[in-house]
Amino acid sequence: MNGRPIRLTVLGATGSIGRSTLSLVDLHRERFELVALVAGSDAAALAELARRYRPQLAVLADSSRLAELRERLAGTGVATGAGETAVREAAAAPADRVVAAIVGAAGLLPTLEAVRQGTVVALANKECLVCAGQAFVEEARRHGSRILPVDSEHSAIFQCLLAGRRDDLERIVLTASGGPFRSWDLARMARATPEQALAHPRWKMGAKITVDSATLVNKGLEIIEAHHLFGLPEERIEVLVHPQSVVHGLAVFCDGSLLAQLAEPDMRAPLSFALSFPDSRLPSGVGPLDLARIGRLDFEEPDPRRFPGLAHAREALRRGGAAAAVLNAANEVAVRAFLERRIGFLDIARLIGRLLAHPLADAPLSSIEDALAVDREARLVAEAELRHLDAASSTREPPSPC
Ligand code: NAD
Ligand code: MG
Image 1: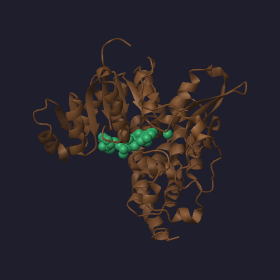
Image 2: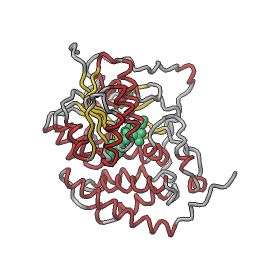
Image 3: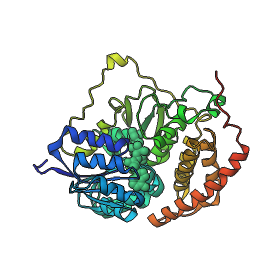
Image 4: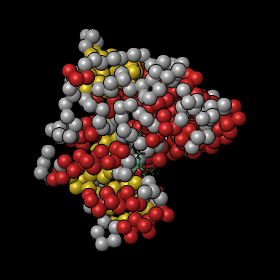
């Protein structure tokens, strides 16, 4: 690494990944210079971060909050902006590394903007790969942008692959914590509340990905993400439930060797790797694992009956075209409806299944524009389908006291 600080932009700065990123900046203030901090609508939170980290630019997606942001940053010298165009301009501002951590398909265009500058992108926003997969990867290739995975499983596998020849690789294994409902039966899962789904046993994350972890749809999205990042077909991407969440991913080689990466379940570890690679690793504040304390590592196959979201994702990946974008949009609509208590927990996978059966899932998809159009259309269809689920669902009763 040369002496110049790394010019860093954080998309989704006020979120869980954004804040973990900034905690790494705290540890290495001299290494980083903040270019832009971008968030959705929380002007107070963004202004507080901007006062502390002094980026050149602080931008909100929600333009109705611009006046508040301006007022809160008056006199600081931090330029402000708001709205979709301002977010994209912030993502395109010259930087050495962009952390892409906006949640959902809303992150696609801003992340793409960074990719089109040829910037190194530390990618947390898996939904943009699920939604626009091939087209996104091709844009990155065309513009010479390197995508470094932040998702802990993909970071693990990326690191394992550095230690072996690609031709010798047989398959990869993504681990899953199993979420809060790992040992619940279906009847109990049907009554699960948002509070229960949000009580993740291992990871502290934003609400959407926490619900995705409870349904295991997150692991389904990660299978699709891994396919695009590592160029492997669906059948060479395995999933194992591993409740301790310390083995994050494995690479299986042709001589029977398995290489694994282990670390505490703390996103600062994969983030610091994505901020420093290929230079020396950065201390992340994450201590080394105490294996004697952990004592044992368990692994089990995921249960397809209770977690159908995984099979849905595999199906979407095999079908290709618009199927994965449809799955992602259906999931975003369903998770929001579940958090708003409009549908039950099991309805999330049900809605995804219904959308995959819709003709839209068979549409071809060959460009970013196609992906955006499919995403928009699928959200409308999903909202309409929600009404059928509403009528059919008997799962929104309050949970029984036992
Ligand atoms: P979060 O909900 O905590 O944060 C989301 C961030 O995105 C916030 O800063 C929010 O203001 C911003 N945002 C939302 N909509 C926006 C928009 N339209 N334009 C600009 N900004 C917008 O979510 P998170 O847990 O930090 O997750 C972020 C992404 O990282 C997701 O794609 C998630 O799947 C992925 N990821 C997260 C973790 C984790 O541990 N949290 C792990 C792996 C991957
Ligand atoms: Mg993950």
